[in-house]
Length: 264
Image 1 (tube, rainbow, N blue to C red):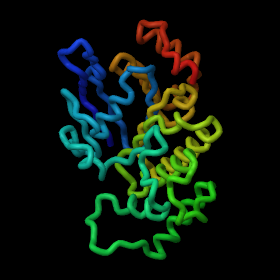
Image 2 (cartoon, one colour):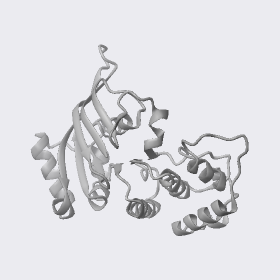
Image 3 (cartoon, one colour):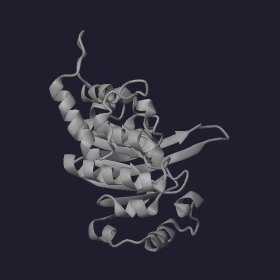
Image 4 (tube, rainbow, N blue to C red):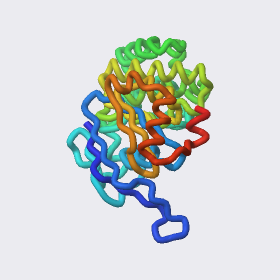
């Protein structure tokens, strides 16, 4: 479902601030894979995710989603293939619009717009049922402005919106980093449920090693723009945080671990 082949990315090339963020990264995700991505600051996690999303183009290599070469496609042309939840709960929704209107827009993504626009009763009932499954009381607040919701409620709504059209690839970009631990756990639980129910191929970037181990069927760790650890299946299930750190030290040749990574 996702095929990344030897992608490279350098920022500020030829200047004193040159930073080689990706160094020939290759990664293949099969249909239904849920891959967590971890690494310290500057490891290349977000750069890889943004390269897949089309936020910026890569210097070399190729990216395919569902068999379609999107390497040179701009971000808006990749939208039909990708659903994304951002780190900032303020992104991904229209805060001045109602919950109902946000869901209707998400459901119509990629479709041709008509002169008339409205939400049918059947749609409204469908959205209410979906919101009820979130167990956040949002099914009774369809006409509430999204900007009035809490961070956790907005992230849960954004998750629902990102999965409405069943994208080829769901990108979770540190989507619980700005939430308190209890709310973050709830959003992660919802993420697991939505991914499983829809059979979505998913990439989740996180700083939290426990979350990276506990969620998904595959884990990769990045270091200095490269993938240095790739575990899946039973090996991943049995992994512990100390074992992951020890493995990282062996493959990276470094005993250093990013403070944010350890504190998580």
